[in-house]
Structure formats: C-alpha cells, structure tokens
Amino acid sequence: MEQIGYIKDDGDLNAVFAALADPTRRAILTRLATGEASVNEIAAPFEMSQPAISKHLKVLERAGLVTRGADRQKRPAQLNAAPMKEAIAWLEEFKQFWSSSFDQLDELLEQLKNTDS
Image (cartoon, rainbow, N blue to C red; front, side, top):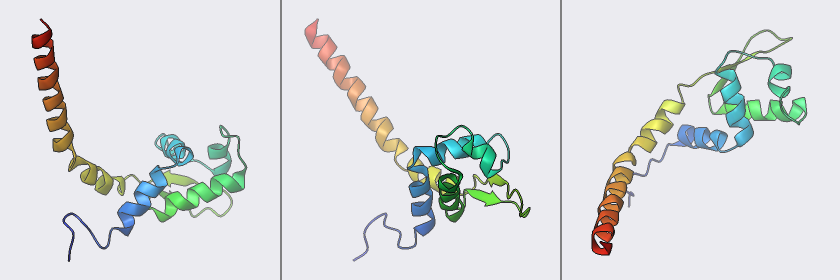
C-alpha cells in the first residue's frame, strides 16, 4: 500500500534537511553565501576545532550543499544552494495549510472580540 505523499527515493531531500538541522551547519552556509572560504576561515568564528568543522563540511558536501575546490592546499568550500530548491518546494506544499489555519484563527479571534463587546 502506497502512502499519499510518500516518496520512496527521497534520500537527497532527507540529506538536505539533516544537514540544515544543525545550527553550526546553517551558520557555515550563511558564511559561504558571502563567498568561498577555507576551513580555517570557516572555523574562525566558532569555538571548535578544524576537524570538527571539516566533519560539518562533509555532511554539507554529502547533501550537495557545499562543493570543495581542487586546490589541495586550501580546498576552499563554496555554497551550492540548488539542493535547497527541492526542500523549499516540499515546504511550499504546506503553505496553503498554514494560510488556511491562520485565516481560521483570525475569524475565531474576530468572533471572540465581537462576543466580548
């Protein structure tokens, strides 16, 4: 039995959401949105080791959100935002639900306001 809205091969989407679930990785992506950076440059504002930052970068790479340069010395990281497009599309499916819920809440608050008057 197939579930409605269930995608069997959603590994890429799962990887993107897993990568975005960590605040350090989101901060790294925010930094990379301003331009490519080396591990040292990425690690500078964090209170963690370069190997820890490298582990976060590997998670982001597996999700396709980061690409690494060919320069063996620096291996600069660059943002690749394209995989976020699928995540945004998935989230957009719920936009109608939230809009409808907020509209219903507005109506209820208006009714309560009118009965109190």
